[in-house]
Length: 311
Figure 1 (cartoon, rainbow, N blue to C red):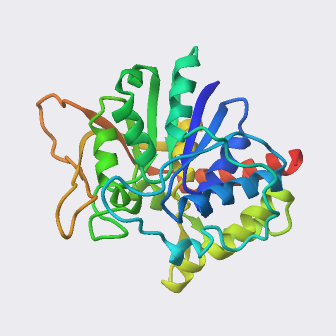
Figure 2 (cartoon, one colour; figure 1 turned 60 degrees about the horizontal axis):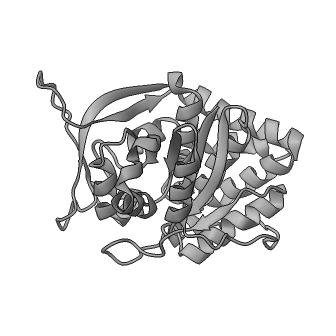
Figure 3 (cartoon, one colour; figure 1 turned 120 degrees about the horizontal axis):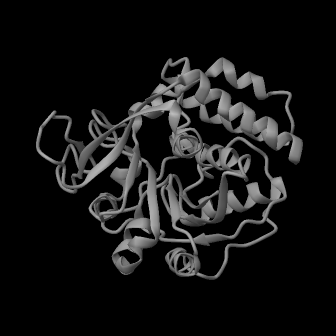
């Protein structure tokens, strides 16, 4: 069993990623959630997660992290996620609250007490992860790997060359990518290759509790794709979780990746060295290239079916 901490900014696709993780308790042991400002403000994304926990009847500890990036201003994404950050589902008010301990102090405590190494699943901006590594660099050896949804090999989605999670806090991303800890990057290309067809969402319409949540999330979330004339949408943040569960579904390559922190048009760009060189790479990252779309989507629906039987 792999011990994981999920660092997130829920966010529709964050919640779907969490649903997939919850359905695989024998493979993924969620030690806790840490939240970071990104898709919406820190208070909103934290409350979204707590409300989902109440809806599902679970109580995994939640720790609030940073409410803004290291340098730039907070830049939330209401077009994709709505004013709440999780528009669409009607959820009960949260019963539990976030813990008093700050996210990076929880990370520190967990790593100090852990007998085995811990994997971080980072599916929001990297502010928490970056500042944790900067504050407690001596704990890097306790981290197995950091699996990130972020970046892109060729293009961006906020700027021409910058993806949102990295763009939101490139200074934090640079700390993470330069840390020497093993990093797996699930960028835009692999996320798009695993996109779910809009028609496939209907499979969850008449399901149980988890399926209904997924359906309501997707009916709002896929509105962005519909407005753009697309027949499918990527569930970005599910990609790192599915990779941990089924790495065989993915094609990956070892590449050096650099984070651009300046520039009018490419701030937040993940500069992936795609040259084929005989020289040894100094700090390679595992870059996910593509996935098997049909199998990727089936993992999500299998997870929903498992959770429907539990809740």
